[in-house]
Length: 201
Image (cartoon, rainbow, N blue to C red; front, side, top):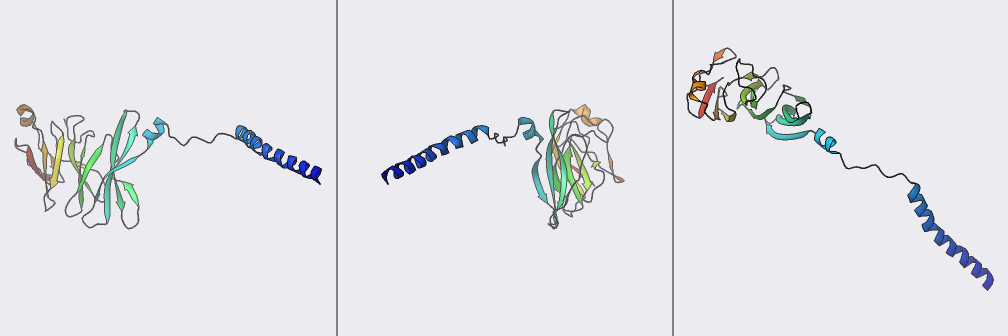
C-alpha cells in the first residue's frame, strides 16, 4: 500500500511540474497580440468634431469637422449639419481651406461662417478669413466681405437681415480701394473705418 501511494504521489507531483512547463511552451509559440496603439499617421487621420450650434427651432445642429490635408500639410475644417430627430448628417461645405465659426440666423434660414477659401469676389486677399452665408438647406455659399485682414467676429441682427462684424482696420489706401459687393441682388453698404461694421443681407 505504501509503495502504491508513493508511486501515485510521484505521478501527481510530476503532473504539477509539467503544467507550468507546458504553459511556458504555449506562451512561446502563441503569436503576439496585435498592437492597439495607433501610429502617428493613424492619429492624424482621425476626424474631430468642434463647435456644435443648435438651430433656433432645436431640430438641427451645425458643427465643424476637422481632417488632415496631407497635400497642404494642414488641418482643415468643413461644416456639417445633422438632424436631431433622425441622426442623419451631411456636409454643408466642401470648399478648399477651412470653414468655421458657424452661426444660425435668428429665423433659422441662414448660416453665417468664416472661411479662408479662395474668394468669389475679384481681388479678395488670399488666405484671409472672409464672412460667408449659406442657406440652411444647402447650396452655394455667398461671400459677403472682401477685407484686407481676417474677419475676427460677427453677430446676426435680430431681424436676420444684417450682420455686424469686427476686424483689424487695413491701411487707409486699401480701405479706400475696397469694393462694394452684391449678395442676392441687394447692394451691401461699404463699411466706414470703424472696427465694428455692419452689412445688410
